[in-house]
Length: 144
Image 1 (cartoon, rainbow, N blue to C red):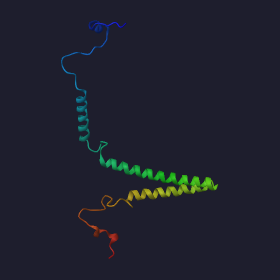
Image 2: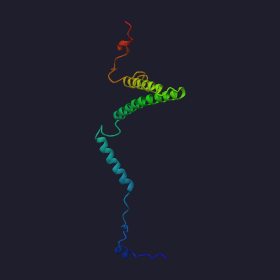
Image 3: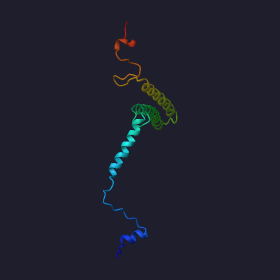
Image 4: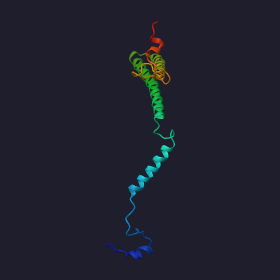
């Protein structure tokens, strides 16, 4: 059997009761929206420090791409060398040779990524193309 405690006795015992006023309770979503607006305004006031900076994201993407290409080239080449060693019984010589070939291939991939060799059509590094100048200014395709 549950015994109910009157509201007056509940306040004396120390049970916290909600404040029952006739005003409407505060809207929690409105307060959250206000705090989000303040945070966005604070972030937009300081350009270059937010995580939404496009140049920072492009730099991070390029760095991660270069790192992944280097590591994958080494791992794949070393794995192939290990498999060939197991099959041919030449352990560890082919693995060692393939490791160094993987390092070389990874370095070539890094070089290509940094210089833009075999990049997407229309891609040029910063400063390579100036507005208003056409292909006639490219010295490598002039045959005269």
